[in-house]
Image (tube, rainbow, N blue to C red):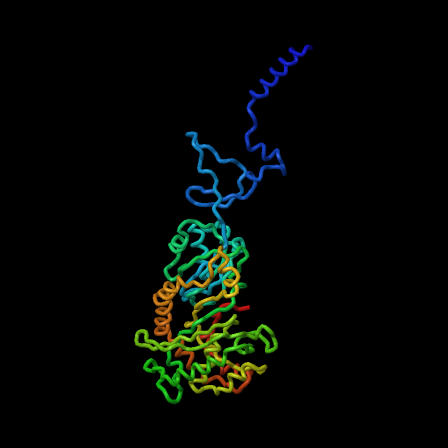
Length: 422
């Protein structure tokens, strides 16, 4: 066959080939095997009917009947953030979520539900919180409130994110602030210290032999000075094995560092005088703060000698009363080392929450303090607990003091937690 004929045959064959319809685009991804385009196999976030979903996309966007394209897939940024939380803990079984135990409602149950409804996280992150790298600074337990809890997690940075989350939360749980942090940030591990406060009626300091024992009592200047002198003894590093459970006197983790502890000036609420004790430490064990307060109250009231305070740090087991959990509040968490390294790097803000202090104070006045006052009036938890102090023998070992006749009433027992336990 001559060259012109060969050329014509090739052209006819090429025309028939190009006229044939090609396979659908989806076939190429299945034919390509491991060489498929990353754009067709990677995870993508796609907006469907106004909600963002996390899915694997293997098909290009479909076309509408009218010929117009649907909104092209757009990846919403997923970033590590921290949320400043405040909540009243009454009616909750603590902060930490227990997946599978729905009868024990926690603060995180309501928080996760709000994050999903607001469109910040996929629904499956609610059943496995590790998927969003969730961590809280402190595990406040049953009934304990917080004015400055901080949690870290990864979310989609949707518009107006704070208002949208809060719109799905009850009024006694609020997100007061949000800040971007480094990708590896962990709110518990990066926290240098925690500040708690303990609000109690001042008649808890009324001497058992000299003062009235009810709401008529008013804290004197001399008694306040005595309280602060005793509280200051906790400063520094001590062995607090007697202030928690299941800790031996020689366990290194029983040694804790307290930066400061003091009682503020008293104030009145609904005709009842209260005072607030503040304590700042690196970390606290279960029941530690309640027992620190309980021992000082026992001394001031005249049930225990001052010498028991120093003896409690020794190896001997000492029976220390545990004050009620009602007044315990996580006040603030501190990130000094993180702020020194990243707070002024030009990319991240320091985690000091100075601009949110007004919101924190307003939340305490609206939700935390009124709950403590009303519950104390209705349930009289402090008065009931004070009535158990005479059964404690502060010169005895814990084995002698824990006889059935010296048992604290079960209504005053229970786990409230002091927050960030081991």
